[in-house]
Image 1 (cartoon, rainbow, N blue to C red):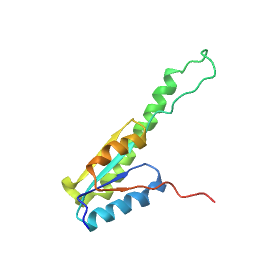
Image 2: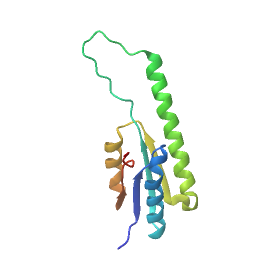
Image 3: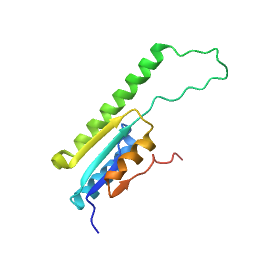
Length: 120
């Protein structure tokens, strides 16, 4: 069995590091390309009536927080794939993570997925 490309969801959270490390190890083992996808979205707002408004400051702050998290995810991916050269590709954006990863996964043979550890 052989893989040409491996894909994983890259997050800024420390709990996501084992998933990235696993994807790197698999890509190294099979000499495969590695695609990292970092996607975060601005949470949808729900109102119970039409009399609410969202302050522009909140939207600006939320977008900055997300952009900072995407930069941190990019740094984690670049750090983990130093020896990959052009066989490492990082994609990021503001769509919901699941559809973004699903769309990008068409370019891969294997998806390395997993959630955060359970809190007990």
